[in-house]
Length: 215
Image (cartoon, rainbow, N blue to C red; front, side, top):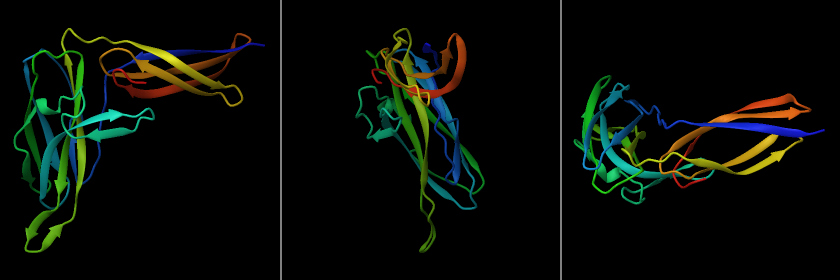
């Protein structure tokens, strides 16, 4: 009696970040392919879904992933693959009227002598707005727009399955994928288990983001 399984993996470059905290943004991500010293202009729409004025701040933050998929945030220009300081934000603060929307124009200025993949999180944050006197609207929150910038002609997509634990009793599997390239990947696939050449179990492997040089 022999047990074995097959594992198929595919990669998709994508990441979305979206939440509703009295306002929404669209789109939730941008993925650029650019050359060194090239500029990319883009817009993000902000919609106020409340009945009150919101005061908004925009700022860029670095981020990375832990092995369990938890997102860690850092100040701008902390990480080597950061493009946070490439993003020109104007205005950095503004008010948005109730039940209305604004289109915010931004520019990504790519420096020279860069290669591979760079990323940042562009945060839109609402802060309490002073309506009149001491009356305050205590609504605060933030929504992130993920920014990727891949440098044209320099990216390498590559990865390996470097670890695998399997428990036959309940068909539990823990696979470790290592991104050995220099661009972000989204890994997904499926697991199949065969017994005497007959498939007895199949499970979809949900998509997971993999950053360059990470597991």
